[in-house]
Length: 610
Image (cartoon, rainbow, N blue to C red; front, side, top):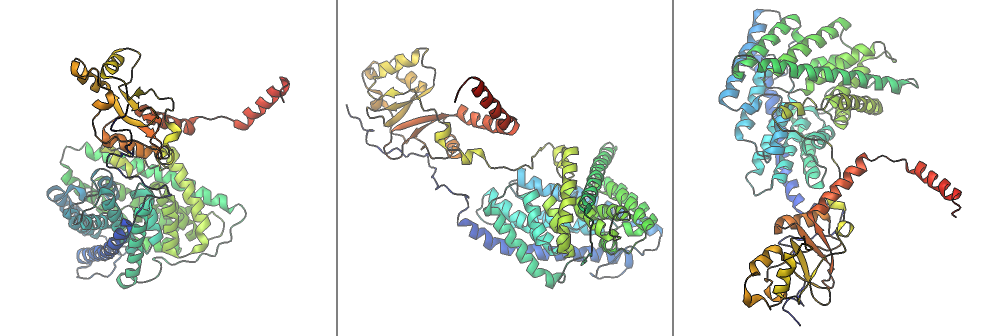
């Protein structure tokens, strides 16, 4: 008996399209993103210049009484009540801006950018793009011990996000442009395009795909081209260390990493303990930055150099321009005022302070290290502190390399940074960035791997011995069959006499036919609707099969031969779960295969087997 489905091609995908197997899923649309990233990279570079200029303007007006955007150091400020008063007033202004403007300007910017990417669809508001640099300029300009990198990451990200929102783009594409803007801003300030791209990969993108990597790298390259005009050419802190380490020098570099990792863990723990103290205060969080400003002012009376961005401190550490007593004072005072100021919810970045903390401790340890050059060990401490605290070892390594321009330090930097990274990963569940996000109820993971659904084929997990129904079966027979306890599945494939898939029949179909005498003698092939049937092929990825299940709202996908339409197998939801289980097994099951194989051979020999 023939039926109308017997010659029908079976390639129904429910609206999904198959793609040819390849290393990447990126298509030509990435070229559109590259073009957009050129504009975003330019905007991010100029935003960085505006932010740095605003910080300098605020600093010159508040502390030196004149209008100007030239860089200014607070190291030589005379001690007076003004040092205490100005950070408090600055904290008041920031609290008001956060309360009545946007609460998202609080903090150092990177956690907020991560939240926008993960749970906000990579959408940022125009308020953030305006208020974040303004609040950061006020915070740092009035003495806040912060850097400009966190605010520019937030500001550059907001620019990229706003630009993307003018076009029809997916959340993933908006994320790419958001991160491109952030990378461009960081590149413009520090002259570190490679480190900016690594920061994007290690902290912000949560993926490694050409679709996102190429546009972000493009934006960073565009920003570095603008930098000579905006900030000047060359490394930010040019150095050239003539170090001849002994044979055990690599272990000394590792020791710096251990020390920086422990220092990072201590600072992170103290930061959130102090933040808990602020949470317990019986006043609105709007007033907290004023209290943080008070601590800044008191610290400024002890050591004025501890206030502000502190790039002059970094330069002094690398150039061995300080006495040991000065380095100790700066390390202690800046650590305390930074901890209280950041915990209070004011606005400013963490990167420059981390460099100072790690650099100062590395400089002090370097006094007893080989080479008689504490500045070299200070650089290692900076990179290790950054890489360990932010859980971004490649970013820390390349950042230190690019801001100094000294390629000879590459291996020591890598050793120190990776060791610090290992220490913080083993000692702490979360970093200084993700702890804040976790406290807001969003727990994230920063371990990336290949999706097993994308490299496993349907033929590897499909059920080959499939229970099927014959297309010539009558409706009455089908109803009786579903009524028996032997048939426990809810859906069965229907095949014709040649083994070709016709359709699937569900228990719901049988229930709708039951009791209708006119249908009893008709075949189930005649009763099956002409709706397209989503099917998979043996070489389809399991990810494609999962997408089919979602698009068709079904839990079972037949697998057919694409050449002749014959049924090959079936994949159910439980088969997808088994794949997940096998992945976990590969991660956690530990077996000594060589030892086991040796025991098998000995057993075979004792049993007389060849």
